[in-house]
Amino acid sequence: MKKNTNFTQINNNFYRLVDDLFLKIEDNLNFYDDKIDIDYEVQDYVMTITFLNKSIIVVNKQESLRQIWLATKFNAYHFNYKIDKWICNRSNKDFWEIFEKSCSIQSNENLIFTAFKRIKK
Image 1 (cartoon, helix red, strand yellow):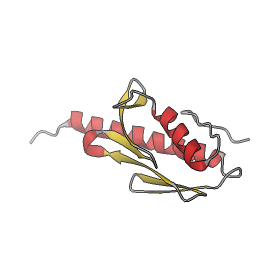
Image 2 (cartoon, rainbow, N blue to C red):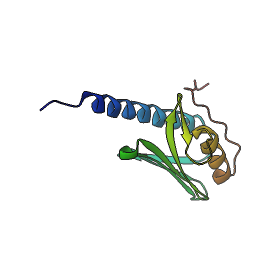
Image 3 (tube, rainbow, N blue to C red):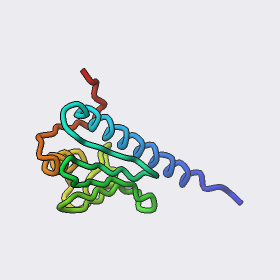
């Protein structure tokens, strides 16, 4: 039986993109570690972010759909990877725009995130 290498490549690429996103999220959250109280936990590609006021944001992968899902206190979003960005399938907004706004609202802080790796000073 011939192995479907195209599917394997797509699957590996999806995991690479998800890993990269999760690392960038962690990096951005860690940037604020000594400034505000944000806790997060990652288990099996599910990231749970808890703020001081006990509100929660969940980021997880949906492998079968090749999507990232974001659940906030106010809404839920599904993102597809398009042209080097995770884009919401309803609003066409970038993941980082929605994630930053959601975290800022739920933490009651003005958080600024970047899609690029930060260097902590």
